[in-house]
Image 1 (spheres, rainbow, N blue to C red):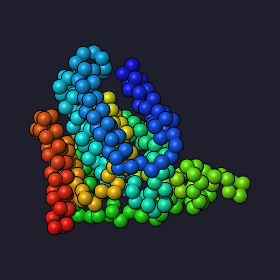
Image 2: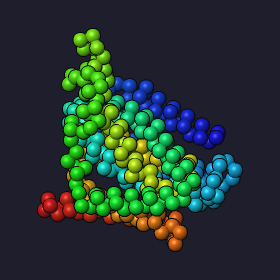
Image 3: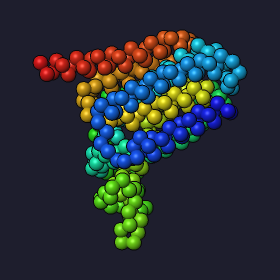
Image 4: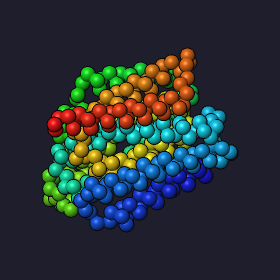
Length: 315
């Protein structure tokens, strides 16, 4: 319990420093600044695997699956890479939402900051229920496996996510029916007074749509990481590090998404792999190093092929 409290407290302290000091004044985040923060978060995420190794080398934390330190570390890194890879589609959707509601670049960080607060809460709840379901009903593993393979097949044959229109979404229509909404943007405010009523600005609307889409993405990502381990701390910490790095990664990649078009196939391969892994868990258990190797190779291959295709098209 102490480890959980320390971890969550550390996350909250950083988020407080982020909004209160590093980004107190709204500004356009350059690719260089975003690149630096992306490198910092990725480095911290991998360094945390050393903390995982230490925690699981003794009695520092509850260990329901009886993992040794090396297994725990590999499961954490594998889970983190899965969450990181599945964030790619999330970044695309965020870019579409900001464009649809015409959110100025200097206010986008504030929207994503509060979006991450909500994402942490929702992910924690989904992970909690996912772990409970798998521990209580072993057959849920097969349900998650089938769902992930279905998602992979759907991604392969449809491109609906790239035609997403936030202003036609159900959540946007419901929001407009439940509260007054204005198209006026007043600095970084989520609400303004309009005709003596609190009225939601496009920043708040974008925030709610982003939160809703994150919940939908979590329906894929949480079962995917549960295929690696059902240890709640490993699942939660790998999720949180991927989410915390999502903001800087968005600002770093938002203008370069077209260059990484083949990463979509990497995601399909990863989802298919973890889905199959869950379906045959009683027949064969993949070694941790093999899962990590497959996911890393899928990501690297997608990046290399994407960059080569861009270079080929230019020539």
